[in-house]
Length: 297
Image 1 (cartoon, helix red, strand yellow):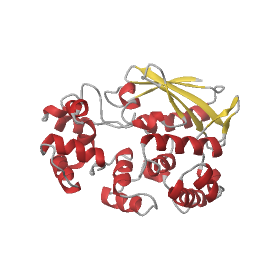
Image 2 (cartoon, one colour):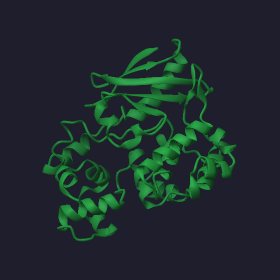
Image 3 (tube, one colour):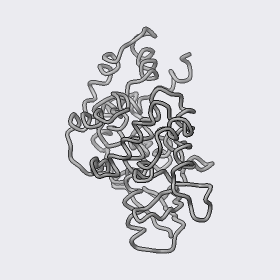
Image 4 (cartoon, rainbow, N blue to C red):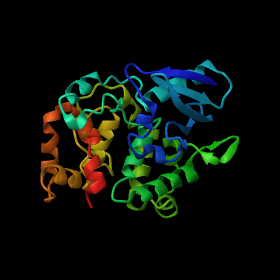
């Protein structure tokens, strides 16, 4: 099955693919060219499909290993539109970005969209697994969840989709902690899966809900394992850019950009991007840090 999805405004799939590290996490597989990816997705009725996205004029060309089926195509179109941010319009961000030399590049490169997983549940779990660990640790933990609990691809059972909440809800916490090696995060992931599977928590509703950022942030912070950094990161994936995801890297960048290498705190990082208002998260994420990344120790 092949079809093309178009964006509402100027768009670059390679820019989205490389917007952050998500494409390095299973079940994503980035293409050698770096401009597209393959992803395994479990559909609502349980079928696991391999889906490939490559650049197309102002959008993405999609190939799914499946017989032509209007219902499957409609479901995939919805999921991929979300994953690739095809329905996002960043014209207002580009308008304010034009006033700042350090953001002068974003419009020409169609930057601003962040690659998402097929479900908010997957993004929340993956974000929890980025906390208090190295990136290699995150990659290992995500791969472990997929390998142990993901539904297999029929033509190649060694490859699996990200586990659904229902499947993870049946996991043993000791298996999550010791075998998958989630450590202290194991009960957080298990409780999240159980709450979503039971219907108590509707994470997917956040895709379309109109919720003030402050309220959504409170709901995110109420999830065990989600602190201020994780909440800010998830807000950005949900299209809310009012907070900067402040971590040790943010401290380093802001320190060298504005404070001559002197130590800074969270308030100073937030203050550096306060002028960007509801776009402060994107301003931070796509700021031209090239010189600092190449020259700071």
